[in-house]
Length: 81
Image 1 (cartoon, rainbow, N blue to C red):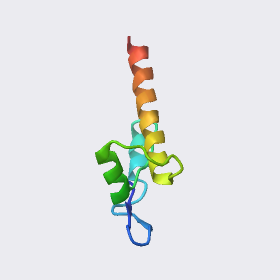
Image 2 (cartoon, rainbow, N blue to C red):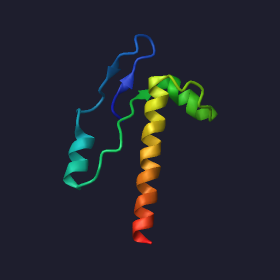
Image 3 (cartoon, rainbow, N blue to C red):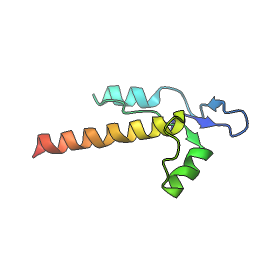
Image 4 (cartoon, helix red, strand yellow):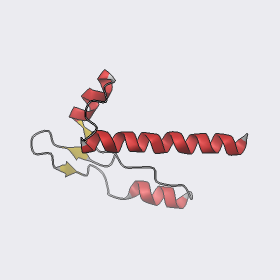
């Protein structure tokens, strides 16, 4: 989780120290696949299983990160096969 998006003003606030995921990825020589802030609106959309607005930055960021994760997993499976 990279932060929390306020439903009133849409400002993203870091709940934890910033950059921890990147440091951990570097320490273990892994790529940082993405940073997705918690957004109640996005949570509702995902709970419903609806990808409704391809222009919405939050949804776009989530699905781009999900695709990076899937792609990375497939590559690792193929390499290990």
